[in-house]
Length: 308
Length: 323
Image (cartoon, rainbow over all chains, first blue to last red):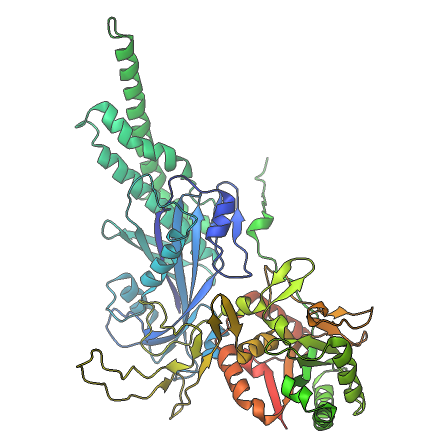
């Protein structure tokens, strides 16, 4: 019917970026399962997947009661040793039986939630990306716990260089005529509606996580620039407030680096409108210009006669 | 120049899952505890006498089911060296093999129960099979579980539903709640509620329960366990005589060099009815173990390619004869 997921993204609670080997240890959340790491073009580490059992109402825009039973797939991601994510999703399918079956039935279908009774995909998609009623499937809480799992690792020093809120991206993917709709709701909440050709594959999850990472980077850089209060604070102070961005964020921008080729057109279309990379570059230039002007100012004061 | 299609791969970014050779069925001919040993060799002979006709039946049933009639059947025997240590391998193994031979039974593989908890691997050091399985438990959720809170757990226990709420009064002067029954999640009409102790701890030492180790044992026989993508335990042939110490004996010993593979698509255990509660507990555990997706696909693909249709659910691949 449809796939729904939620990604929570935040700044890794550590003073500096962590090494590849530390990433492996932080993400080793299941005995005997390997952490997958890719190094090009940016270090990207993926924990093993874990399942969580659920048996609850699914969010429906019509507020009709739809019961779903099955498992949620979750994993943790660390990008560039700096950005941490907790990500969960479920594939929603119709149940062939009209009653709850023994648990072994659901474990033979990891990541699938079976709907008992009638439900319309559009109703669930609207419900999930809208305002889900309490008591409904809460993927956000599950993803939040997986992000906590990373952030709570004893290997991290919990001395993050700046404070930044987590963002949440709630997404729904369906098969059909290709389209993508990215919506900013509040400071932290985003939704994504994606219609892709062909059947769902986990590559769609990679795309959503990649979008969430870059949306968080952009949001964070905006916040840092805003906090610097360029123009209303002395140049040196503003420049000092911008330094964390240079130290920790600017090199992480790698849109669609890990997205499968058939899904890159979705990124491309978001690049046209609203133009994530365009906004990013404009912010980066602003940061660099501030630092450059401040450096020039410092140089000129230090060369003034009598001020040595 | 036309566009060039580039492919780039990174080994560390891919998952590799090894495969195991598989028989059609793995038959457990028995399970030896200290009390059986103390009862003398007669108890063992009696066990094999009861088992013999069932093994013949299994062979002929699988012979009919497999195209060409060439069913691969392997037999195994489990000795408890975890809960109590008795005798020595050099004394016990020949005794078991001889008692089986009296009833024309061949034991292909002999395993130590403690290996299901932990064993020393010459290559990778200590392997904790029980921990591998523990991390793969996915609790059967009662209705209303929406993911907003972590699963309700009683540490070291696993059940198939919701436990009775506590009836103790919240404070000394409070009113006690009336008793409410526990509820099985997938009940049909009435509940059969099962709550299994997985382990207990005394100080730093954890003792795994018999059903938990038996669940590990079933997963090993089904060839469904992997550690970092590798097969964690392979049978070993002992060439220089039986050791005097259980720890010197490999986790699973191949007694017959010509035997069909140790792991199999399905398992059958021929057991005394006194093991019935243990096996109910084993099934309760196994129905909450999430086996690696890739491993399940591998096994399903292999069985289909040789014309054998396997049950989708793991617990349905396990059968018993209680005699």
